[in-house]
Length: 131
Image (cartoon, rainbow, N blue to C red; front, top):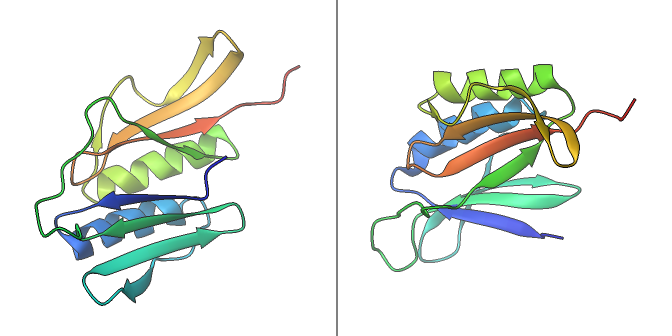
């Protein structure tokens, strides 16, 4: 459904360190630098989409979206735990409930929530196969 997600950040190198760690836990290579002639950016590319971080084009400070969440698919609860631990170790802050399985209207799911160094809310989600 999505081709890409790009977040504005206030400290590009601090955010790159954070995202290299959390996305590295998902086997995604470190961000690739790109300068579009105005601002610096990093892009993380996979066969299913692109995630990017950028200095805001308008020169104003980046802010997080209240009520917004960006979800990353993980292959297992252990990969989600590694994602969460990498985030906390690299400037992220845990939020919501602790990582783990929850029962929802569509069945059992694993969720882990973080806020990145700029306050953006992130989630790792795993849907185990139905028994």
